Every structure is written in C-alpha cells, then in structure tokens.
Length: 534
Ligand SMILES: Nc1ncnc2c1ncn2[C@@H]1O[C@H](COP(=O)(O)OP(=O)(O)OP(=O)(O)O)[C@@H](O)[C@H]1O
Ligand SMILES: [Ca+2]
Ligand SMILES: [Ca+2]
Ligand SMILES: [Ca+2]
Ligand SMILES: [Ca+2]
Image (cartoon, rainbow, N blue to C red):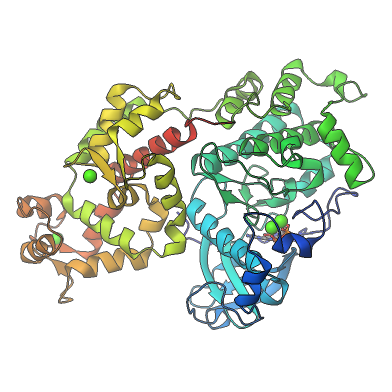
C-alpha cells in the first residue's frame, strides 16, 4: 500500500479553471482584510510577536534541515495553483515514481500565523495520511524560497470539473459520492481534525476513469479540535460556509453543513445559497431557507430532501453527525450501505494481542519513538482529548465514561480494548497509545522497519538471535522470558534466528495489523462519541 507508484496514468484533461463561474472567492479568512486577519484574533499570533520573530523570507518553516528537493526529484509541469503557491508534477529520481509537489513560497507567508498554518497543514496530512480517500503525504522539504510537500499524485483531475461536465449527478451516483465525502469527514472528526474547507475543488481523483477514486487534498485550513471546543475564526468558502461559522461560534458540525451544500450541488448543479455578492450569499446562509421548489426538485426523491434538510439544519447540535449521515436510508438504500461497526469477529483477535509476540510490540515502540514530531502531533492531540484528568494516562474509567455516548461499546469490548492496548497496568500511557495507534502505513515504511531491525541487530550480522533479544529486553526493562519461543514464532526457515525478511513478514502480518487497527478505530469511536458541550 502506498509505495507502488502509478505511472503513465496522468490525464490530459487536467484543468484548474473549471469552477463555478461565480466561485471566485478566496477560501481563507473570508470576513475581511487579509493582512489585518493575519495579526488579529485570539488564536492568531500578535503583531508584536511577529515583529519580534523578525519574519523574513528566509525564516525556517519546518524547523529542521532537509535535503534539497531538486536533488531527489525532477519537478515537472504545473498541476494547479493555490493561494500560497503551485503544485507540480514531480518524479522521484531514484525510482521514477510520479508524485505531486505542493510548493509554498515563503514570500507568500506574511506572518507568524501563516507559518503556523503551513506547519499544521503538514502535521494534519501526516496524521491522516494512509486513511481511506485521503491523500498520502510522502515527504517535506524546505529551501530558501519555499516549502515543498511531496504527496501522492492525483492524476484524475478535480471532482468539480466532473460535476460541471455532467451538470448534475443521478441520485445513486450522488449518494455514492456523498458517502465518500462524509466518510472523509468521519475520518477527520474521529481523528480530532475539523476540515473547515471542504469543497469540490479540494477533492481530486486518483484516476480520471474512476470517479469514485476520490482523495481529499487540501488541509490548509484544517485544525485539531477537542470535544466541546468552540472556534471563532471565520474561514471557509462563501457558498459552503455554515451559519454558525459566520456567527463565530462553531465546531466540527460545520463540516457536515458544507457536505450538505455539496450534496445539494451534486443533485441540482447549483448551490443552495446563492447571490451575486459575498454578503448576499451570507444573508441567504444565515436565513437558512432551502429551495426545494424550483423546477429541478420535483424529480428528486423525498429521502434525498430529508437528508439535505438534516445536513443543512441551522442548529449544529441537531444536525446529523457524520456516522448518522452514513446511516441515513437515502445513503444505505441506494445500495451503498456502510458497515463501519466493529466486526465482531475481530474482537477475539484483540484478546490475542495481549499475548502477541513481544518482539513486535517492542519493534513497534521503537518505530513510534523514531517518528518525527510533525508525524505524531495529531496522535498527541487525540491522546490529550481522551485524557480528561490530565494525568498523561488514559484509564479504564475514561474509556468507560465515553461509553455513555456510544452504543458501539459494550463493557466486554472495553475490557478487550484495555487488555489489547495494555498488558501490565490498567491504564494506557502515551508510549502504549502511540505504539497502538501509529497507522500501518507509517510502520511499513522501509526506513522504519530497517531501523527497528538494526536496533536488535546491533553488530549488523543480519540476524536477530536469542542473545541479542535478551540484550534489547534488558535495555528496555522488559521481561526476557520465552525468547526462544518468540523467535520460533517468526523463524520461517528454522535456523533459530530472524533475518530481515522474516522480520518484515512479522511486522506486516495480518493478525497484528488488524489487532492494532481495531484498537485505533475503537479509540477513534470513543473520541468521536465524546460529549459536545455547547
Ligand atoms: N496531490 C495532488 N495531485 C494532483 N494535483 C494536485 C495535488 N495537490 C494539489 N493539486 C493541484 O494544485 C491545486 C492547489 O492545491 P491546494 O488546493 O492544496 O493549494 P492551496 O494553496 O492550499 O490552494 P487554496 O487556494 O485552494 O487554499 C489543486 O487545486 C490541484 O489542482
Ligand atoms: Ca485548494
Ligand atoms: Ca488550501
Ligand atoms: Ca500501561
Ligand atoms: Ca530464520
């Protein structure tokens, strides 16, 4: 997954100019003058701070040195343009694989908060990378002029241009697409991220011939949120912005409103809140009346209208949540029923985990420790959100407390979850959590696997032996019993030691991945179902 590259699929109808004719509004701080917004607002850095920091074109953004992107990639033609820079087709010199490189010019970053936004965009891309329908980030680079984000190439062009070409979608097609889009929202929300800039042009297709190969690409306005946290910055794009955002008091529910607008557009080809001017659009949004009468509507099913009404509900607390949208009959009955519930057959496997090969557990911790800060910030946010008492551990009680808000959890499942995530104490600490939650795509990266292997194989002989394992266990204060058995489980050619290939097979073997992924998704459910305080 993720490391095979698609060659030659690059579409020739790639255009960035296919937009709604009137959709020319910037998708940033839409309530006024940019420069002012740069320095105002409680969460924004102060002007004094910006000056103290002595902003100039050469200020580091990433905070660490990187190789020069041009030594590793050949930059090709422009794929698209955004507010801060351009995205180019690029080819990795060592492999010939094609990627997209989003180049953000530092001269366009005018204040500290612009720099913070870029950092956060990268952190959030790492946090969500590898999730379904979300673009995979590969690496980041920085030079004097720019920050470069190298990511998966979406060669199929914008979802938006497809909509425009068709005029509108059939209900069935619309249902399938909105299921993908709301699935993306569910992924974001369950990972503690609010997207804030959902709109068709921020969804690309991997493959022009597959209109369901959708990828969310632009997390430039996304933020981490905690349950109950109230946001006040007015950001988004006019047609898609929720009324509570305009009223400067909102949370993740705003993303659902936006998806409701997208659904309306998919079915009718026009936005639900429409006017010639920005302020005219805002008036319509705040008014909230939805037109179901125009000549397009008689042909559209009542079930579709019902869903739109519930997604465009003016009261955020009454609006459907992402998982509720996915359960709505219009989505399910259109033959795309979702099945996000925990697969019951997975639960017994969770139990196996506690007895899981300690070598895997240890390797996982080693890999987790090696991840860069920007890769794990998102997980840290999730952990903090669950750690309600601020004690740096998540207790059984905290997980159990979350149960009240979810029908998904049964007591026995929470027990399994705790047992799986933790074998000795009755709490999950940060190290255990991150080892549990680090997603497979990160673990599978060659450099991490190699590093973990080398950790055990200190003399570089190419094998992990009982002796070496014993040393590693001592170093880490881990039990060193049953080491022979541990090797036996992994040793495929019965030579009593583990070579790199055997090690990789162990790390990638299914029982392991499934176990941890289930832990991760269960924790996500818990987070998603946490109380919303408004
Ligand atoms: N992974 C990708 N594959 C192909 N094209 C891409 C990719 N990422 C971005 N693009 C192209 O570059 C354009 C700009 O990218 P993006 O939206 O991330 O930039 P931005 O500066 O955040 O723009 P905005 O002004 O919308 O905030 C996209 O609309 C798209 O056409
Ligand atoms: Ca964009
Ligand atoms: Ca953006
Ligand atoms: Ca513990
Ligand atoms: Ca062997």
